[in-house]
Image (cartoon, rainbow, N blue to C red):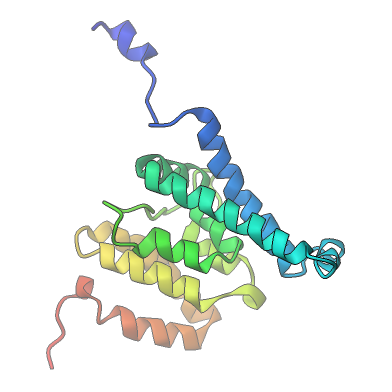
Length: 199
């Protein structure tokens, strides 16, 4: 195989472009649908009260969620790459998808890590963990911080590079949310990545 062949060879993602675009759009769709359900779009929200619209709406949300779960099960490597490129986990944080995020980060059936920490996003904006803070104090949810700090610090046992992102978030916690800072710092220092604590 010559050099020209190497240049023209394409990287295989394991699935075709239509499937890739479908899962990206599914993440954005969940964010939009959940914002409707939370009342961000008043006109849409009012219409959910009438007839059986709410049940149909929740069924669409569940089907959209299942598209993402099925993609992850069939194409975990592609999900990992797309998450780095498009910060799909960050989109799901904005969609308030706690159960789906828990599945991505902690389901033991996954081989390897489905989410990689980002010091900065692909587009130079905030990384995934900083995205929690960018939502503003009103929307800060300690659950997401807990998930990400737990996930990153657990991975740091094998590779200390995972702690770079954690180290970046600690000053923000200290400056903006002192009570959360005290809580999470106590938990972090008892993680295996900091070594065994003597009694």
